[in-house]
Length: 287
Length: 313
Image (cartoon, rainbow over all chains, first blue to last red; front, side, top):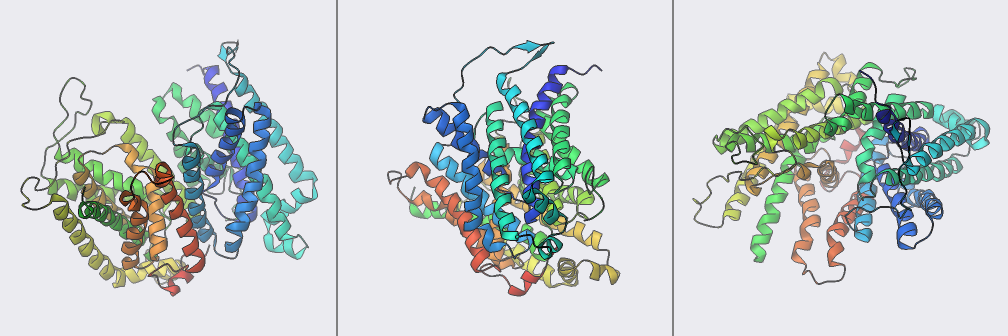
């Protein structure tokens, strides 16, 4: 069987979005140690705010993207102060259930403000060029470039900056990092700022590639979870690899299985991954 | 519709959700298992019963070629059993996983099942609604049918409540509680904790299947969008609000959540924000969930001691 390059391209686009989202989710998990079910709804909120700035207020898409990302970055901190902060001493499971409440709230707030139906960004219509038999859109190229830049940026941040190094230390061993003088509260603030910004950006990317809907992020959440778990929960490098793997596997699978089932590929990959490598692709048996 | 009729409909929905919450309480309240596949068990029960009790679709546009036209009792019983089997099948590979991993795998498995229901039109009518599901004793009830169904559903809720309360305090239930507290301890005492978890998963899923059957035979028509993961999350909210570990709490929590969702049925449509009310009530469910977790973590009827358990890593 010859692989259709179009499918691989589609997979790279979807994989870029999943990778970015998975990176944000796994950063939050690494430091705060709970699975944020509301993460998909953070993504949707970022996409909606950008849409409102772009299509409703009529500003250029670049401004809209910055607005959406900043909104979710600050919004995540606000939600932490309002909600999650008060549960920080509780068990990870309690926090997970709290995040269900937050998810309900955000998703239905979006529906209440902007209605249940789908929207599109207001973008200039351009003919989709093709290269070597692969048809692509400007948005898709932008998604891939933006995701690579972001992944590189986060990599440098985690390796080179004080806050990044503190994050990695806290992710490895929170107690030890605190003893060594890492300011936990400041760290939490930065994690939400960065994690929220990434959520907003990945939501906007998702909206650029498809439709903006209230449940868009929640629907994508399973593929994102699959990427995070395949890569090993809390491991940024793994999340990115897992994201590209799921994205490409999902799109390429269309060649052999009915299209309707392509979303099942991520799920099956997740289940097989968990059974064979419960600590992730690069994971050590720590959990 | 008169107020009483509306109340009966809300009551029927509350009863069905109570059964779902009873099943979830067996998983989380008694055993400490994070099940996020409840909507799928609900769907399996509903579809099994609907397929067994209706004839195959006819006509030129018919897609569903499977149908058995069996009695409703057979359908609901089979729906209950098959949902239980599906629960065990999902649990077989996943129930050994740690809490949050289990949550994600079961959520994924549930979506896979929904995807199959949505796409296997020969069996489920696919994306279209499966219609003409028969109602039990339809036409034979001398008084309001909704009143009959309300009584039927709540009688079943009552029986299940007594059954599960008993099960919870039986030796079987005590092993489940021990697993919830710390599953190394019953293991050290020679209990096969894996088998107990499988049974807990199967039984809880079966009640959800029963709820599915009762739902399908009440609403005439079902479609895959009725079984989105948001149902699972609503049931979680119900169990937590009512108080994990308490079956009375599960029923109360389900009634509170359904009440909050349905209360807007009683508000006239021309109030301000009338269009947004259905979303606002779900926002309220989210807020109530968070407030209960903050101010009363054991829930309305839950036992504070239960909190010590199942919540550790």
